[in-house]
Image (cartoon, rainbow, N blue to C red; front, side):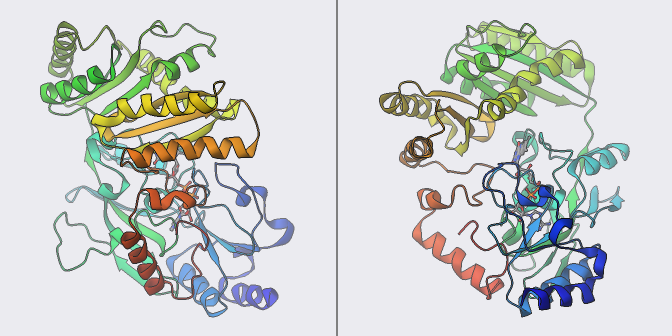
Length: 458
Ligand SMILES: Cc1cc2nc3c(=O)[nH]c(=O)nc-3n(C[C@H](O)[C@H](O)[C@H](O)COP(=O)(O)OP(=O)(O)OC[C@H]3O[C@@H](n4cnc5c(N)ncnc54)[C@H](O)[C@@H]3O)c2cc1C
């Protein structure tokens, strides 16, 4: 049967678009989680929407599972084959189709790397509101399929907020082209939202129209030390009131800051003794006036006791050194094999959540080291656990403890990375039975044969 399908796909797409056997490199076996890699039956590499449609028609007719793959930077296992699927890689469906300066939009093909879209937007005098550490490899289609967040969410929203129009190929090969450029369009259901964040289970994104924003004149960055979680929240609201907006607000509990500072050769930009650290960024339009307002805002916060210490970056190099600490948490976690969890809850309760979670973990595993940090302005907390053991049972039980606490605090088990395979067993912690039942009905309506990325999300 497999050979029939592959012959049909070769006849439809041409030989060079269908990889099998040794031609399938290890990169198609796993996403960035590195968990349970498995090679797919074949890899399809279509160049056009029409080829994606033709491929899906063949696979749907043969009832064979199709796994869409973007840049494979996902952190939920959603792009990792489970066995027996045909991977449909978007890697050759690349390119920018148009920048429309009047509408302030950019129209892109799904396989285009995020960084390329950012660069073209920048050359045109605009800025894309989406940015994340994996920008060089992650594709726009993957960003949309995961509704990626990242470091600009507090100012511009998640990937969903950047998408005005979408072209999607449905499981049966139907091409739904809806390349809308209007901010307002209430002509019945806004179908694009079904596909954004659906992790390849409802359709394959082939093109998108994204909003662009004016490019800021410059970015002001400061590293702050704070005495308590309440001060972190007060400082966020104070900064937003004083400046109108902040473009990034990243908090680190002492353990996260110390975790990186202790592992780096150079001196950290601030001593490791403070309870909390925040990196705050303000993207302005008038460098001189903005810098003055930024300094006044910080001085006021210091005067009111929200800040213990503050350093304003005087150059891009100094700003980079501050971000290196924040981005270093994730990098070092990978090196030391930590469990990395991505949760969210109402911002006012995060401080209490951390203390409760820390207490529950310490009671069961005194040697386990947790670290906490995140895009706090977006109510997003990253929890990392160094269990000090490879024992799968202990690792799972520790994750379970964190998710139990998330459920008790009415939070979400996935803030921005999605469900994939890694969080499937806990979906009911954050969605009601009625919500999950409706998700199943949507899945059945759009993909009655269940060929799109089976075994993921639901
Ligand atoms: C260093 C690093 C930093 C990161 N930082 C962030 C962050 O700050 N915020 C955040 O939200 N995420 C972050 N991520 C994870 C994030 O989900 C991905 O970086 C990105 O959004 C996924 O894009 P991708 O092209 O790599 O998708 P993949 O990993 O290839 O796929 C992810 C999912 O999308 C589906 N998919 C991919 N392309 C398509 C398509 N065209 N149509 C339909 N389905 C598709 C796949 O089937 C899979 O379910 C980070 C990852 C890394 C490695």
